[in-house]
Image (cartoon, rainbow, N blue to C red; front, side, top):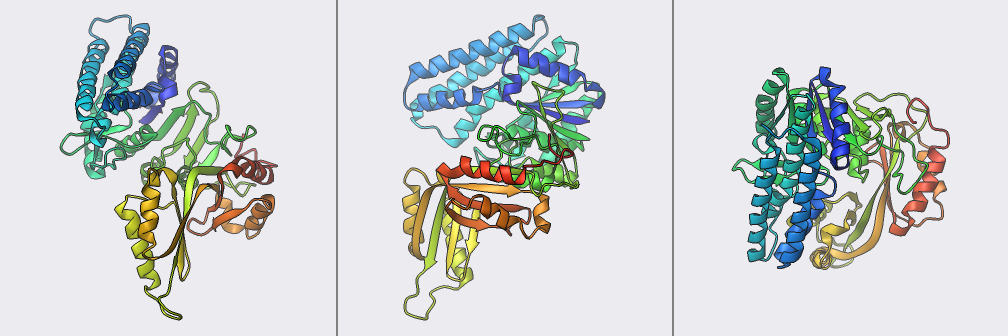
Length: 467
């Protein structure tokens, strides 16, 4: 069995879905399980409709929902001509009726609670999966629509729920295997799950990748394929550096660090279920299915280049806290107590530091700027000021160089710093992950820093690893 996940741009219209159907047909002998995202830009529009409802803008809400319903019905009609026995059109009507009632509730409530938002956003995947299942059946590919909410059981952290793996693995296996063994293609919604009590949850940005990995690990798939609109992992973001190349081979550890530090090609958590079961992950381009793509496995292949890719994350904020002694030569807290108090202050606000650098009397942490937006930065600094001198530097970015080759080259850091000698650096960290060097730079320097680093470390790319 293989798992094939198709992202929003891969299922954005009838033409794209027809292309996906042929990609699936070409792999029927491998017994595929299909996971789909919402049609392109649907999730954003559902979010906009929820926000409009909460502020009492019923006109905007109705316009968004009417346009979404027209779009989904129009694309479904282009794909499904034989309406007899097809469930897609009644399902579209049912889902939009439910969605309208939910949005009316938000108008009365005057706000968008996380639980309600997850329920509203789930309709994007529910709609696209219904269209995909009947589109496959229309083309002679026997398919069966399954409900991810019945299988993927999570905690109640709405917006970024975590799976309860023992329960989820059992549910997925019991639901998916009989469908595959009967010769059908299961079609499952990505991104969504539910609590033990049945409340709909979502898995976070690019959560459909995570769903594919969860399903693949549960059924012991031979391969997890992530189909997107890019030809795999790149040596840098091509939107920032046009000469970026495709990375053909990558390890789980490299992919995990790259996604954690900003590479948008995969959900940051998607690697872990696959790595746990040692299942290869492939990233392919649904618009160019013949392209090589990227293969991610546990095995590190020899590579002439020290790094595989350069990632970046922005905007971030760097926070410095230096302990102040009450009098010369005295300490108010031990280093462990100081760090524990600081982390407790972050935990109370559900803030996870991206980087942490600790010395005997000070700590520097880097956090996502949105996590401390809307006055939360001021409140956090006031709280941390109880521990010592606290300050925040916003408008920063993390640039990360990732590669297994870093573990055995003592000259690497010097070459990197020489390449960006004119750039003012904040935190520099090499050690929390032996295959990653992180540096904090000004947000406006990111493009220049990535270009210079790419020219130094990919001037002669290994053809066995890069394309």
